[in-house]
Image (cartoon, rainbow, N blue to C red):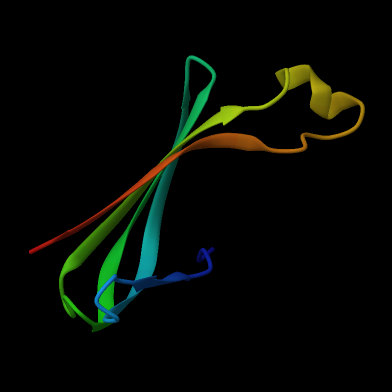
Length: 85
């Protein structure tokens, strides 16, 4: 089964852009923190053809058992984008 392709548009301070298509993802939970790593390529714009990695670390905003009653309402965290040759 194929995962849907994720796409991201990055806008830089100088007005340039990069369009990134992610085709691979890994998700793990470590000590309550959800880590997601997306991998793909810049398909258009600045850095076209270069490899891109997006890493997101998310902290739950509620106890994990909250999903049993009302569902989880959100999380907070940080994201990092790396574009490399």
